[in-house]
Image 1 (tube, rainbow, N blue to C red):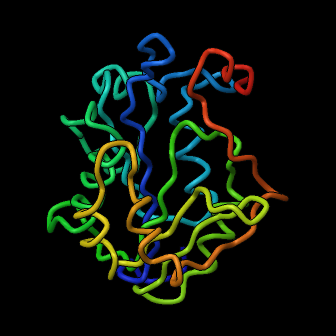
Image 2: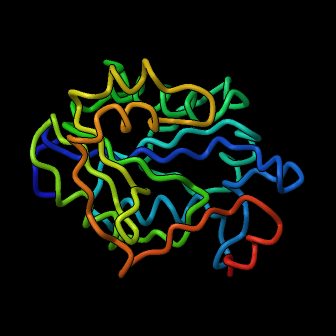
Amino acid sequence: MTTRETDGIAGLLLAAGGGRRLGGRPKALLPHRGRPLLEHAVRMLREGGCGPLHVVLGAASGDVRARADLEGCVIVENPAWEEGMGSSLRAGLDSLTDPDTGSGAAAALVLLVDQPGIGAAAVARVRAAYRSPASLVAAAYDGERGHPVLFGRDHWAGIAASADGDRGARAYLKEHAGAVELVECGDVAQAYDIDTAADLRHLE
């Protein structure tokens, strides 16, 4: 990146899920192109221009650390990962504001590990829409809000306070819908999730 660290757009990867509907296979370790799915998501954030990168782990975190290359990433453990995505989002935002692990980033671009159809082009497009620490930006697919999403630093406390269960930032974004800039990404990405055995067909 050419910007100063304090002006950076941090990449925040939520990768703590246990894959309940996949028979308890942690999504971070699903094979994709010969490597754990987690590595693919980290690379998309990096190639999309995000940095620093914070990765939230939960289910089988010991195995994930041992099997995935996370060099250069800040690893965030979420012991409450079974509570849902909201707990991982809170843990990730806490790590970005922690004096020991935070970097003074002006915004966080959030990506989910189980959406391999979202690549660096969509990450870069959402990142490019950043204007200030008050920015709220989301990718859109045929006009419908999706991921990735970018949260300016001014919103972190409010998002963390409202993140609950598997809703993540959904309630906060709905409440602030008028402030969310939608960036169409349907021409460069596919926003499917890897949730069930049938979805594994998307992995290579």
